Length: 78
Image (cartoon, rainbow, N blue to C red):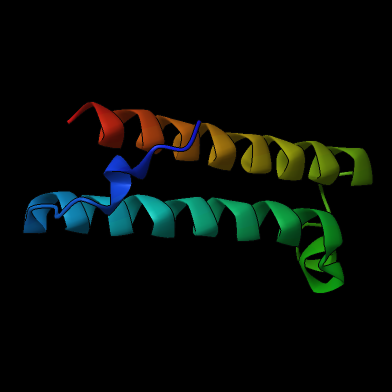
């Protein structure tokens, strides 16, 4: 079922924390994708094998979604 409580008016502090949480989600997501797919990053971290870069990228993407779910739970409880 859809939760339309997210459209309620929020205080400036709640709005700022929501935007900051979304920015952190996007940052971790982009970093994870960059570790996996961006070739110049692979040249820069030459000491990490390919499977290590993919593992780090997957971990960062997983962590981004955990933060997003946490943000949704924390936001709806207030």
